[in-house]
Image: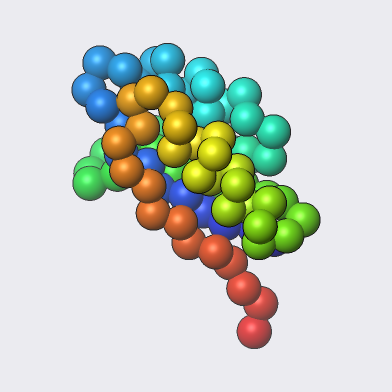
Length: 76
Protein backbone atom coordinates (compact mmCIF):
# COMPACT_ATOMS: atom_id res chain seq x y z
CA UNK A 1 0.00 0.00 0.00
CA UNK A 2 1.43 3.36 -1.02
CA UNK A 3 0.54 6.89 0.06
CA UNK A 4 1.71 10.42 -0.48
CA UNK A 5 1.94 12.49 2.69
CA UNK A 6 1.87 16.28 2.67
CA UNK A 7 3.56 17.89 5.67
CA UNK A 8 3.60 21.37 7.15
CA UNK A 9 6.74 22.05 9.18
CA UNK A 10 7.54 24.57 11.90
CA UNK A 11 9.78 27.41 10.71
CA UNK A 12 13.33 26.92 11.92
CA UNK A 13 12.88 23.19 12.65
CA UNK A 14 12.87 22.04 9.01
CA UNK A 15 16.41 20.54 8.87
CA UNK A 16 15.93 18.39 11.99
CA UNK A 17 12.43 17.29 10.97
CA UNK A 18 13.57 16.40 7.45
CA UNK A 19 16.49 14.34 8.76
CA UNK A 20 14.14 12.36 11.01
CA UNK A 21 11.53 11.89 8.26
CA UNK A 22 14.18 10.60 5.84
CA UNK A 23 15.29 8.05 8.45
CA UNK A 24 11.88 6.42 8.89
CA UNK A 25 11.56 2.90 7.52
CA UNK A 26 8.86 2.92 4.85
CA UNK A 27 9.47 6.51 3.72
CA UNK A 28 10.76 6.36 0.16
CA UNK A 29 11.03 9.83 -1.36
CA UNK A 30 11.04 13.21 0.38
CA UNK A 31 10.71 16.47 -1.54
CA UNK A 32 10.67 20.05 -0.26
CA UNK A 33 7.93 22.12 -1.84
CA UNK A 34 6.84 25.73 -2.01
CA UNK A 35 3.28 26.68 -1.13
CA UNK A 36 0.82 25.59 1.54
CA UNK A 37 2.70 22.33 2.23
CA UNK A 38 6.44 22.26 2.96
CA UNK A 39 7.17 18.61 2.18
CA UNK A 40 5.64 15.83 0.11
CA UNK A 41 6.81 12.30 0.70
CA UNK A 42 5.91 8.85 -0.47
CA UNK A 43 5.50 6.05 2.04
CA UNK A 44 4.77 2.38 1.69
CA UNK A 45 3.59 -0.36 4.06
CA UNK A 46 2.07 -3.83 3.77
CA UNK A 47 -1.29 -2.94 5.32
CA UNK A 48 -3.47 0.07 6.08
CA UNK A 49 -2.79 -0.39 9.79
CA UNK A 50 0.98 -0.34 9.27
CA UNK A 51 0.70 2.68 7.01
CA UNK A 52 -1.45 4.46 9.59
CA UNK A 53 1.09 3.65 12.31
CA UNK A 54 3.94 4.96 10.16
CA UNK A 55 2.12 8.26 9.67
CA UNK A 56 0.66 8.75 13.14
CA UNK A 57 3.32 7.17 15.36
CA UNK A 58 6.44 7.99 13.33
CA UNK A 59 5.90 11.06 11.14
CA UNK A 60 3.38 13.09 13.15
CA UNK A 61 5.34 12.52 16.37
CA UNK A 62 8.41 14.32 15.00
CA UNK A 63 9.11 17.70 16.56
CA UNK A 64 8.57 20.33 13.89
CA UNK A 65 5.81 18.48 12.02
CA UNK A 66 2.74 20.66 12.51
CA UNK A 67 0.20 19.04 10.21
CA UNK A 68 -0.14 16.23 7.68
CA UNK A 69 -2.53 15.20 4.97
CA UNK A 70 -2.38 11.67 3.60
CA UNK A 71 -3.34 10.68 0.07
CA UNK A 72 -3.63 6.89 -0.15
CA UNK A 73 -3.17 5.54 -3.67
CA UNK A 74 -5.54 3.12 -5.37
CA UNK A 75 -5.71 1.20 -8.62
CA UNK A 76 -8.91 1.30 -10.63
